[in-house]
Length: 273
Image 1 (cartoon, one colour):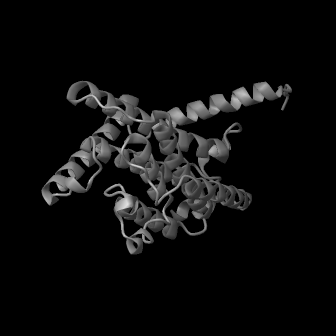
Image 2 (cartoon, helix red, strand yellow; image 1 turned 60 degrees about the vertical axis):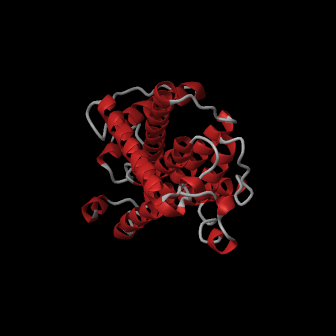
């Protein structure tokens, strides 16, 4: 009642928001486990299981010859890392704290901070997982060289951006259609096991099959990433512009939907989940 509110400069406000996003990101990373190292370790284990499963599948089915000329495991990892970043970010954003969450009762907390921290937390865990696995592979197994490392990293960030954009749209409509959003998110993540194109390259697909995959922005980012990773592969059936445009459009739609949903927030929504 007698609290004095001090006016803060724009710089102080920005620093305060960034600090809040940092602490919310740490909290989001620790959701999987109380110990942050264990949470990251579990994610590394999941990525290794994916790598082992696809390596065995390619070897048993005799599909190694259909891969690119170069390091076979690097070919698998270039698809799996982008796939995991995309779907994990989507799931994290969809599961972010909504306007009716108890966390929103704390004055500094907003849905924008909740969404940002969920997306950044997913990116942090996936980038750290990728860096540790690639480092161990380079040191313990065989040295490798990425032709354009910064461009390849840009494709990873683009896969993260598209996952966050799709997750933001789903988060905006989640309070209105919780069952649909939950089902759609699960189906989309499972469908991307094949639709992402991590098991093949776009240049080797016939035209009628290419139309089944080129709607997916993740398909374009994985194919372009392989063009930056391998010196002898030039993707001409995918492009970078399409996933960027899709991500920007979906982000704008998601922000407008989230704003509308936030204005109609109700505590009864939590009971429907």
